[in-house]
Length: 110
Image 1 (tube, rainbow, N blue to C red):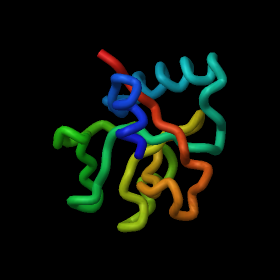
Image 2: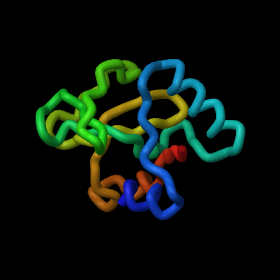
Image 3: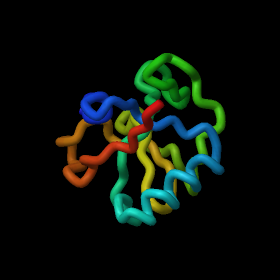
Image 4: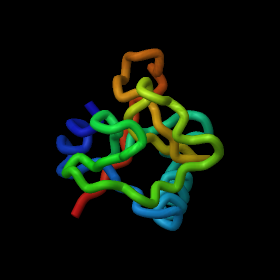
């Protein structure tokens, strides 16, 4: 659903390559009021194929994900990536799976 959301606007899910990019996107979203402290928005990356190995939609392995705290901590239950104003975390991939607040996506455009 998040991938479709970005594609419908001519973009794709944002890929966070390092902490600096997380800060840049977070600060921009805070400035326009599109990100909250506790609510996550999807970004590109999933470890559905191999637990703990996050790949982009194009199959590129993400090696410098700016996780904070005890993340990733979802084992086989949380296989997608999300960000909020505080952190990057592994989150449920489905909008309706106990995470009705996870309805946003961070999109990029070329």
